[in-house]
Length: 180
Image 1: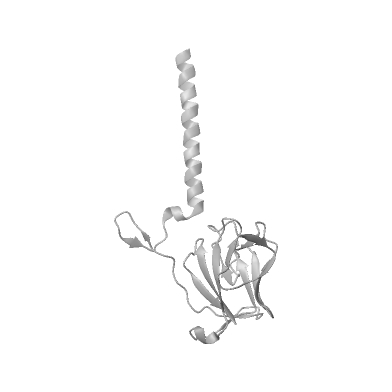
Image 2: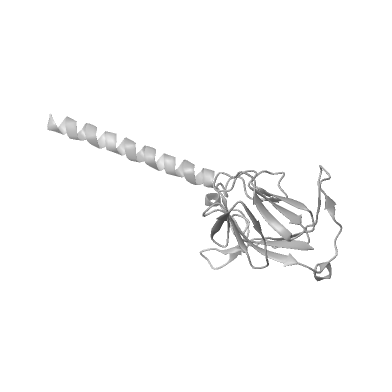
């Protein structure tokens, strides 16, 4: 039995990854088997959840995330997964659609990779890059954009607020100076 995760929302939307491991760690932490963007997908916890292969199939287990794990719109701490289930890692956070693969012959053969701790084998079978975003001139670009980084957006917002405060202080100074 294998599980394929289709990321449908978040910084890596469009990515498709297939696993054959018994434990799949999910979160923003870089050592996660299925990791989210540490700067863009901030609603998800670093160590958010695990997908475990048990006797009754794949089960999602929230491992103490701060914003919860949601399956098909319902908050869960533990839930058996089925094909078509949508998992949301925090409300408004990254989302994946589940595909449970009963027959391994449905997946292209590639060598399995063992995690560094040797705990489970997982296999990345395919990766689909995020969709290209059209630019103003009608062409497509898959390169990173400056304002796709939330740190840049926060910096620009802080600069704008600073200028607004400065203009307000200058206006008050002029008003008091003219008032005499």
